Length: 111
Image (tube, rainbow, N blue to C red; front, side):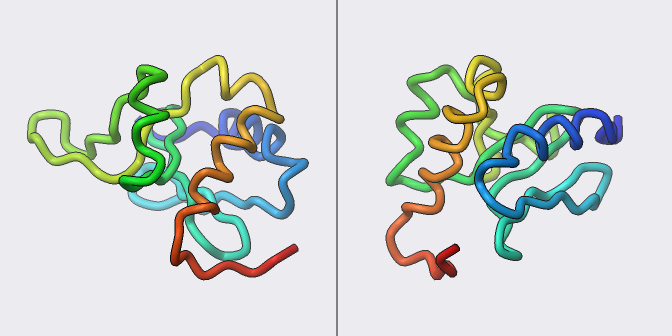
């Protein structure tokens, strides 16, 4: 099922206070970008944020599941589902997204 424009618009509105966040549709889903850097993705109207070893535990503890591009295969990607209660609170959502921005060694521009 493709990503709905209504859900993408909702996400962009939730990220509104975090600067210029955009969505680019691709492969039936969409990527979420800030400063031209992908930090999240959307598939089947479920939003995911990029994680690594430095921030994955928080997502796991919140009950988040990893993105599986192929449900019938064990392959998972380094994106975890945004918990619904976080998605509904823009300030909290931005804190969760900033966990990716805080990963050591990531090259970022300052706003």
